[in-house]
Length: 357
Image 1 (cartoon, helix red, strand yellow):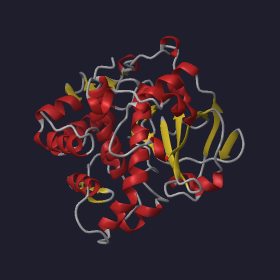
Image 2 (tube, one colour; image 1 turned 30 degrees about the vertical axis):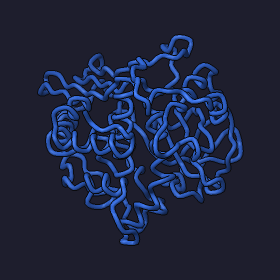
Image 3 (tube, helix red, strand yellow; image 1 turned 180 degrees about the vertical axis):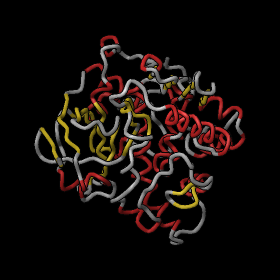
Image 4 (cartoon, one colour; image 1 turned 60 degrees about the horizontal axis):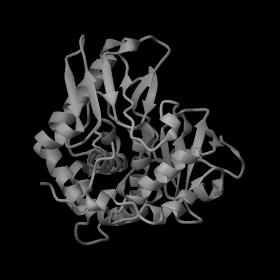
């Protein structure tokens, strides 16, 4: 996509921070035992939702996953977490009982206003604490959530009033972003170093992360399905540089963007449609965003399966006339596409302990 929109740029894993309040560097449906039972730690988990800075810029810059932040232009101010929202998300975090714990690797979760809207969620490694710092875009806290109460909302992006024949729905915006970032925390904290070792031939045997990686990737940033001709993503990362992701995954912000024009050119919409058709028929990715790099593929894939099972919410994007009518749904992909189902079943069995039925 060109620079014609900014309705949503999905999820990126790099942040910049320093010691001041302003930084410039600038329906819950599951009864599954793994997913649904809250733990007694819910109250203490609320302490992870911080209202102000408790980390240093230098510690974050020296971390493994700061990426484009080192070159910087991320400007933001902290926002106080609404009490009910903090309580609700702490409860959802307490329910995430996986083989790998996100909570043990979290330094803090922050709500922030950005002067440059570079993403809805950001995750970065803090070298001093050896834990992850997560920022959530405060724009996701909307008035539509009644009293910020414990409810799962559907927040579709209906672009048709703007003259764009597309309806996109990824569920509850702040919940989906939060869940997505927790899977980034798990991936970066537990799997990144081992994956780098395996790709460099320093480890024997295929781990969960390596097998999942090899299902979709030839190289860290080149999928086994070839380049998407319409939107090839150029990223500077090799196997030997995974452990120090400085120029990494997240320097190109792909996704849908809104511009000053009333609607984007027809050929841009056709590119987006073609990408989604390619995803559905030629790959095992669960969205066009997942194809950007192997880290996003991990977070997108696990978030899709978890959110579908825990909340019965699935990513959907639908195209209307004058474009060819087409619907991509992660639920439909898992149910009908052998390659997508194989990947989903592997994740469910190996990560969630929940084999496909």
